[in-house]
Length: 118
Image (cartoon, one colour):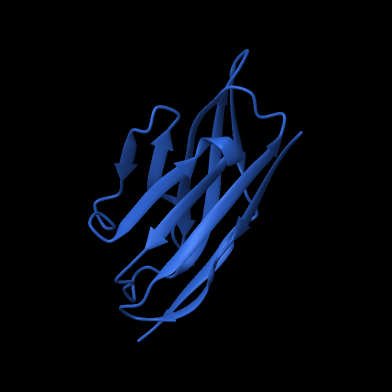
């Protein structure tokens, strides 16, 4: 059993900042990658940023230079620092965990709402 607990969503003014966190627990041997995806109403879920166990990061073009993903391996926690939030950033943000251990398994958090007021 794997649990992902997300925190940090909320309401912020355009140009402001928020920090999301996602803590993984349970049977989490072999974490390969952690990351964040988002889904706005009427749209498909899309990649925001990911970080591998080795520290390699990947960002959606729309957030490059504004968002920073980081990871605390000791705490099995991934963070997303979101700066200069824009009106197009509001969505439900989902934590994603990829485990490679006797196969590959993907897990999702429950999602946290990010709202940006103009």
